[in-house]
Image 1 (cartoon, helix red, strand yellow):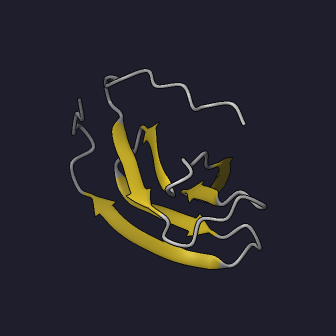
Image 2 (cartoon, helix red, strand yellow):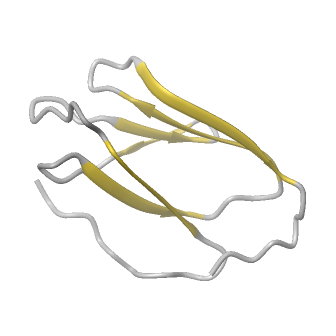
Length: 86
């Protein structure tokens, strides 16, 4: 597996990070941000991180297991469209 590219902090992006306790080596989990599925690279210990630029309004972040089942879903509302994450 290719390690994820760490570009460090980038303007207007926030870091999505966490830990998957039951991380398996056979199937990769999926990160779904605002309905857009992305490959979620995690370490052998199940830790992951990925930068994402959230817009104003309703946003969601979901982790799906390798089998496609929802493991965790969070929805939040960014009320300040000019919010700058750095």
